[in-house]
Length: 444
Image 1: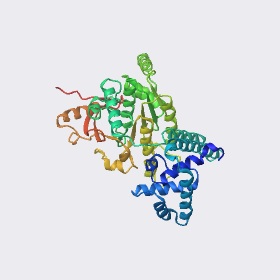
Image 2 (image 1 turned 90 degrees about the horizontal axis):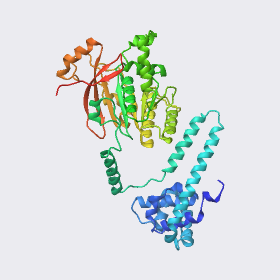
Image 3 (image 1 turned 30 degrees about the horizontal axis):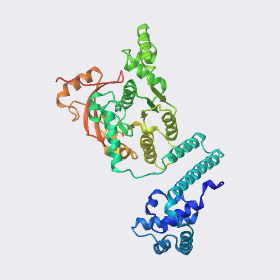
């Protein structure tokens, strides 16, 4: 590896001298073995790290003893090296240690950057590697390098950051993102940055329609929304938007049997919705590509909420022997995106038909990779078959029958998991012809 800036002998050995003398325990938490370029220094640091972890005093004796445990036959070399380092570098080490730690960290940064570029260069020469994936790998490495050095956060900082956030919320400077279903928002308080929400339903219950409803309702409030749909094409999505905002017969939209009145309505929808801050991806097949595209939006401050329709349809460029492992990987990537990018993600998920006609459960979702484990919130959708269903409120049974006769549906939304709040069930009306969710009006 070229250049002296990748390794500073004096800095590494001065720090090792101080740690090895038992007077630099606080440095063990600031550095890692990978921060040391010289193999001897790296092994000595690892030995001292183990000694400290087991609450023993670091000195020549313990380094010799623990060195035998970790490196067996290399112990005499390590012990003699530490003695030599301490004799040459210990004097004045305490006064210089801060600057030397900074030098070591800077060298680590340069090495990591260089290695990432070298690896990318090698990967790009292999035709088997996708160039976009290589680019995304470099992007991730660069982002991680910026926040590589982790540190414990004191209680005061935690509480002050929390106080500042609460104050911004009180002053109306920070809001959750609405679902467009007011009754649901009363339970969830909306969608929050850094959280992954799974909306699970059996086939043909309306999860894609709910995802679209949330995306459009959130965008109407000024939030920047991204929609990744493997379920629909752009024309299908656009048709749904027109259907939910006009009284045009959906059959006429499919056949093109549209009179002047219908065209006027379509023109109004076009005028009202074209300016919404929503953008779509219909061709993204791989979770790695989706992450790369989302990162581009994050870098330009162009996304607050991502809606994924739906999880099981996303593939990975990695190979997995079992399909549930692929879904688990996709789930983990989505959760990482919420925290890495500080956005909210709503991921739609299909629940199997095994117990069709009943409300899905967390146990069923648990079988789909790690969806239930990774999710901060889980909302299930359930379409009752008859008025005796336990998820229909007794006072709503006549309403259920009336809705069924009119072609509309009674849908129960069950908040089955919420890390930061309560659970509960909310009934709504779903108009499948219009792809529209409506509240149930109740007398006070």
